[in-house]
Image (tube, rainbow, N blue to C red; front, side):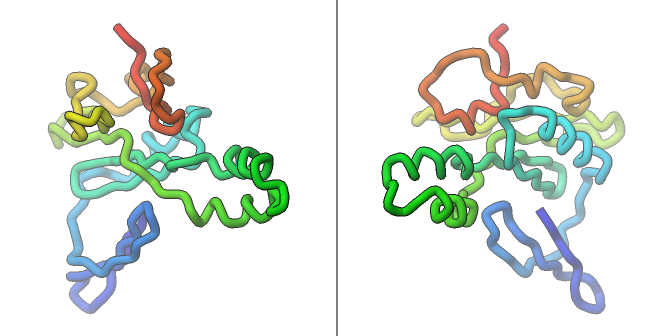
Length: 168
């Protein structure tokens, strides 16, 4: 998310997590360049199912965090169920209530060739871990299949399908 150095020797920085926790931590060197982060941000921005995604960079990893709900769509649905509260009330409260979940990440494998391992969080109960989805390679614009929306219809929340892979 964001990090700002503080102190005379810049040994510490103020860091904000995707879920708005602010931490004072030791400065962490980042191996990912700002250009590479911008490449992922642009690819995510072009995906209509990835509205509201947050990109976080730590050390050798670029992580895409997806919102737990779409505040606009959810406000409409809640206003239908609870008309006495009104859509405006839900629309003002929901954006502050959104939690962000890590959904996809790109881990730097080779600093010289700038190849990244693409990984996706697996939400199956027995796994709950990062799984590799492809062999290491360049970032998404060079591999557009990585950011294609999922074509299957599993009963998983749409926000979690934003970075699904097409079946081979």
